[in-house]
Image 1 (tube, rainbow, N blue to C red):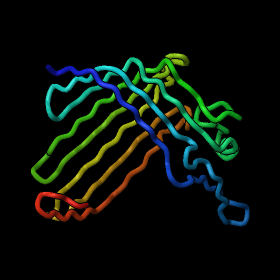
Image 2: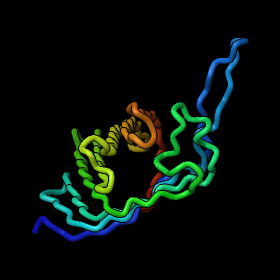
Image 3: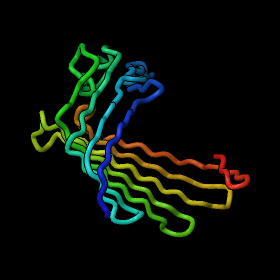
Length: 189
């Protein structure tokens, strides 16, 4: 009763350009564009089984998860620190990883009546190039505190290790305040 078959499609990109900054000899900064819309973009198809023993935890095992990486700007690699192109061969715009697996674990728990913690871990391994070290990892953490009936505070953090992008762990965080208005059961945020 805790196991289900599942399939999913996930598309991930960004909407605005990303830059790397270097200090110039005169003390200023020079910006180098290293990412943009569809550069990179990731399209992943997953087929597998989901284990959900309770309302708080799910585990998705996908032994077949082909992923396509797109880099529509073929000159971006010139501006990256180590001349990488997000795993796409230089001069090409698409990389297909057909023989790949994915694991996703998610936990969503109310810590108190007013505080909720959500975590999500994603592991992606390409069997065609697998050597035991080249595994992509992503960890998302979101903490939501309901301060009043109408005001929430959110803290989100994301850690990514993708060897096709960087040898270092990438990290981002966000602190947000939300206002929710409700009218006859409908919530507007």
